[in-house]
Each structure stands twice: as C-alpha cells, then as structure tokens.
Amino acid sequence: MNTPKPALVSARAAERLPRLALLLFCAAYVLPGLFGRDPWRGGELPAFGAMASVARGDSPWWAPTLGGLPADAAPLATGLGALAMKLLGGWMDPALAARLPFALLLVGVLACTWYACYLLARTEAAQPVPFAFGGEAHPVDYARAVADGALLALVASLGLLQPGHETTPELVQLFALSLFLYAMAASGWQQAPARLAALLALPLLAGSGAPVMALALALGGIVICRRSSYPLAQAFAPWLAGAGLAAALTAWALGSWALRLRLPDSPLDLIELPLWFLWPSWVLAGWTLWQWRRHAGHRHIAVPAGIAGVLLLGWLASGGSDRALLLMLPATAVLAAFALPTLSRSLSAAIDWFSVFAFSLCALASWTMWLSLGWGWPAKPAANVMKLAPGYVHSMAPLGVAAALAGTLAWLALVKWRTGRHRSPLWKSLVLPAGGVALNWLLLMTLLLPVLDYARSQRPLVERLAPHLPAGSCVLAPGQDRSTLAALAHHGGWRVEARPGHEPPGCDWLIASSRRREPGSEPARLGWTLVARVHRPTDRSGSTLLYRRQAATLAGGTTP
Image (cartoon, rainbow, N blue to C red; front, side, top):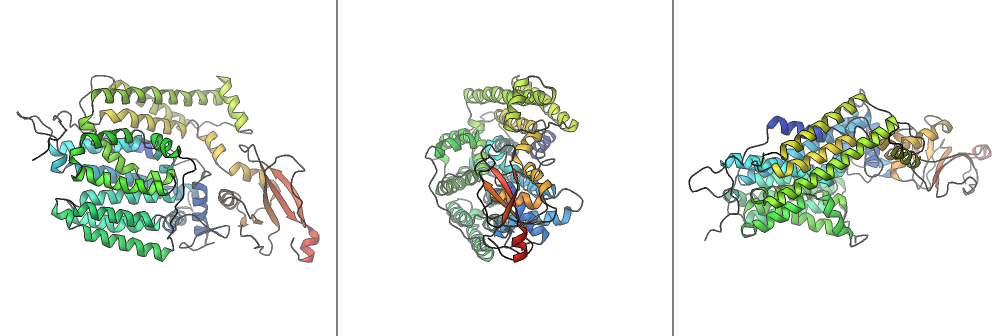
C-alpha cells in the first residue's frame, strides 16, 4: 500500500529563483570578508601561520609547524593555503592569497548542496502528488525550486557565517562533507560522478582532520545504499567501502589519526548552540521529518537524515564543539528544503516577520554604529567603542560604503517583494532569512570591518612591539598562544622559537605574558632585561613583556 505524499505543488509554485539573482545572491554572501582584513585570532590566525610557515620553507607541508611546535592545522588544508601563497603571494597580500582557495571551497559547498538536493528531489518518492485535472509542477521545475530553497537555507544558517569565510581546516571538511552528500544523492542517477565524488570526499575529510568521521560516514552510507530500492544506489556500496579504505590510508600516511572525545563544558551548550547555529534550518528540518515521517525510508529523506544523524553523534562525541556542528549544515539545509512543499502559511509568515524585524534591526544598528564612528552622531556608540578598543582610528572606504548602501537598498526591495502578493514560489519562505543574513554580513564586512579588524587582529600588538624589536630578530616565545606566534612571524617578520628549552644562537629576545598590567608586577628573569611592556588594545586583563638578553650573559655564553 502506497502512503500518500504530503506535497501538493502547482506549476506556478515550482517557479525557480532567477539564475542571475541567485548568482548575485551567492556573490554577495561569498565576497564580503575576502578582501581588506587580517587573519583573525581564534582558529584562523594559527591556521594561516602554519600555511605561511610551509610557504616560507620553515616546515614541510606534511608536518607543518608554528614557532617550531607542531601545528594544529590539518596537512591538506595547510598545503592548500601554502600553495596559494607561493603561487600568488608575489603580487598580492599573502593573507588574501591564502584566502582565495578557501573562498572557492565555500562556492563548492553551495554548489554541492544545490545539486544534491536537486537530484534527491528528482526521485519519484520526493515528487508532489499529481492533480486530478493537471496543473501540477513539472518534475524538473519542482526539483530546481526545492534545490533553490536548500541553497537559501544554507546561506541563512547563522553558524556558517564566520567559519565559512575563514582559512581553517573546518572549511575543507565542510566542502568534503557537501561533496559526500552530493555523491550519495547522485548514486541513484549518475554512477561515474558519484564514484569520483565519494573517492575524493572521504580521503579529503580524513586528511583535513576528521578521519573517524570519514569512516563513520562511509559505514552510514553503505547502510543507506544497501536499504535503497534503486539498483544503482545498491551497487554504490562497494565504492563507499573503497572510499572509506582510501580515507583510512590517507589518515595513516599523514599521521592525522586522532580520537578527540570529551564532555561538554556545560550541558546547556548542547541545547543553546544548535538553536542559533542551525537557525532556521533546524525548524524546517524538524517539520520535514514530521510531515514526511511515513516516507523516511525514501532517498530524499534517508540520505540527508542519515548523514545528519552520523554527524550529530560526532558532534555529541566532540563535547558539543561548534566546529563539529558546522558539518551538519549542508544535510540540514537539504532536509529543510523538503519542508517547503508542505509548509503551513502560519509558519511561513512567522519566519518572514521574524526575519524582517530581526535583520532590519541588526542592519539599523550597523548603520548607526558607522554614523557614530565616522560622523560623531549619535555619540554614545562611538564612545563605547573607544572604551573597548582604545587607540582605534576610524577609516571609511568609499567602495565599501557604496556596497553597503546597495545591499541595504536590495534588502528593502526584497522585503517589499516578499510582503506583496508574491506567494507562489516554494522558496519564498527562505528568501528573507537568507537575504537578512547576507545583508548583515555585508554590513559587518564593509561599514564595521575596520573596527572589527582592529579588535580581532594581532597587528596592533605587533605594531606596539615593533619600535623595541629590530626587524629580522630571533625571538624566544615559549608558552605563547598560537595566534601570537603566527602574528609575530607574519606581521612582524621575526623568527620565532616557541619550543621550551630550545634557544638557537642569536635568539637574544624573549616574549612573555603577564596577567597583570601594572608596571613592576613582572617576574624577575636572571640574565634578561625588561625592554618594554605593551598591551593589546582590546585586552583589558594582561600585558606582553619584551626582554633582551643582558650583555654579561651574551659574553659569558650562559642562559638563565
């Protein structure tokens, strides 16, 4: 007995998003943040430091180091950025050169998610119920409209914003995951592309720091394929086994095997983080699982839900890490797209009005902050910024302001279009969430980029050290965090040695940290003279100490 499908879609509702508008939408999401900024503290600056170390020849690409210490970055991701720096670094900023291939990876994530959803929507079980007198959506048009919704759901995901625009191994992992999702979706239709995608995706995932996840996905994919009613999908299982074996060999060759199990810092993190990180996809994905619950065995539900389930277990095992949760976004977006044919008008209206008010208020706050910093009105926001980032000097880029203005006008036009009588297209409920996220990211990366860069970069710290530390000097920096090591080497151009007990000849300078800012609170160091105490402008709790080896110690050849 066939279970009735919940989707009823007319030909008018299957209207696809205009291709030019879709391309401009993706460009407005991908390009901001690519230009005009430094690598930021956190995960990006250490990863970039490892890439720069390989590009300079200070460490091999299969074993990248930072200040002599093994880098946390995965070898494949590090090699990708280092290769771009060697090829392009001679005529552009090294940070931009390293960022370019990762921007292309983000484009690949968007494309793979769209094509995966399109192929899944083409399956017979995913198609809407035919009308008695005709007028239902054409299968191809319906699949395109649903795939447009999946891409919009991915862009609307708040968790993709910053990680998706950084040069970190997690973006390589995300691309590998989206490629695997495409391979699973294509396995019932296109044999050669699916096999090639799987054989590339799982080794890439393993080589970028997630070998256990690659094997888990291979196993989960085999189970899904064996239970499929599509003969081509069933025949895909051995290829998944081969891809899993290739992933294991890749991890062994690169020495990237690591099982990082830990408990969450707080049980509340397991609830709070997904609520905003996966917004709004988790709401629509839940609706999909409920509306299509009697069709859970079919490919359009089993493939994204199975992959999301494996990744959910991996996220729990990682202690609720946001970087592990990032990998769930493509599969969750595809699940969210299949809610669109069954979405109630009340839920659609709630998503629309929440998006209009929330994102419009955020955009207004960005413009207000920009006016305050650049023109002094209103005065309060600028005064608060100066308290948090003393020494900041605001600058305005005319091109960035023009882009921000164009994006704001486009947002107003989009709101007018959506709140009018345009209620037919399936993807209409995700236009405002995706447009609001893209707009606010654009405003942050244009109007407020200078102050964000000042707060998130380590360049201000290096600039305060530079007058006291000669160019090209060798600096001992044991115990310093990896962001500081990368900044000393990249922004300062100094040779950095961070391994405890290693003091190469000529290393006569020492960087240390103090949790206190008051002069006279620094510990005494035998054989060293304190040269300077500097503070990173946005660090209110500590300071960085610069020492020089005393002349008597230099002559005697002893170390403290």
